[in-house]
Image 1: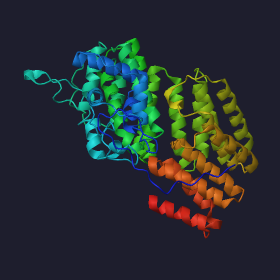
Image 2 (image 1 turned 90 degrees about the horizontal axis):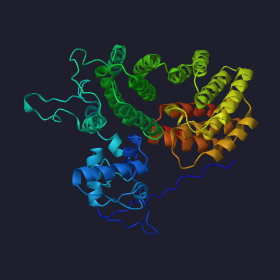
Image 3 (image 1 turned 30 degrees about the vertical axis):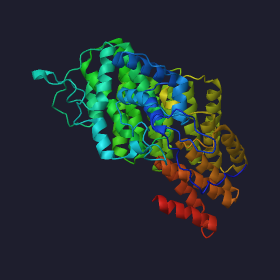
Image 4 (image 1 turned 30 degrees about the horizontal axis):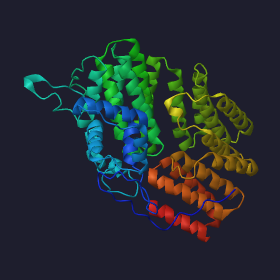
Length: 490
């Protein structure tokens, strides 16, 4: 297995262009991908073709003329090959209701392109979540502007809601306005509450977009967006009557609450994480969504494992697999069986771990492309990573090394995703068992770089465990360099 190449010491400045420059990046000049524009699109659950269609529709409605934008143009904007003209920048700002900086049209942060997500977290959180709980309100008394009291992020949803022909949005009761988000969702689920299938589908796509962002965006940056979306879903549950679409809405709300719980767990806010998990299960119960219930139990198993309760994690995963058995969620079954393999191995139960690993592989081989939003991350590379973890914990370095080779082959070396940080940490463990210390520290350092960029606490925990296993070699230069990187992150 080849060791990872070290990062370049140089830093290339981003290309500077005039706002209406449509020329492609010239040879020898580094292009800067527009991560913020891509992130804004993915949050809506839109493809590049869908965004182009939305711009064309928006242009006809608001400018009275057509726009010639295509999905290929969106692709070039996001890759940094070209920059939108001033007209398209204006349309994109109006469509997403974000500033030029938030859409990456202003080169104010060349390092990551995500500073708009990180900047002023308190201000952004208050703007996205809104003041207490019921911000999705239309105030029309005394001739007031209907949008005057609505945060800018909500107005786009209200237009979507009206276009979808949804029921009227009614003010929320002020009683309980200060309740926690999970308490509001729990209360809404208990009401016998009508929304259109079109609106439900759009909200489901938004949830899917948020799940896809979780792999790259730090939890603290993404959390306000998720809770803001959850607030929208909650209000619809509060103000709608029972209908076939309500079941789908409850399921989408449960998926969003589960994601909020996972993000809270990543931020080490365990009480909030568990509260979100509980209300996600409540939503699963109302929607009769056994697969969602299984997902929440799978998420909760990480907390049990994190406090050393691997037996409790196995019990949660057994119940999760029992619930997943009744649904056609083959990829969910593969993920849960893989998680059980990791936890059984941590308990030293080799036979049970290998049996679970076989079930995971069998389910994965039978899975098609479709499943649920929470298994977007679970690909062949992640399954191979689970094999690395399992074999390493069972002290089978040869099998772990073979799985690591396959895992590296199946994943992009430049993905920078949270799951890759876990994989690299596990591969570092493989090299420790093989007493290849320099390779171990290089993989650990690469993992730590991703952890620093994504603020991923689970990945940091993994690297700290690697460092403990490097104690016998703590006086070597390679380990001292890793210690310096850990201190810098702290």
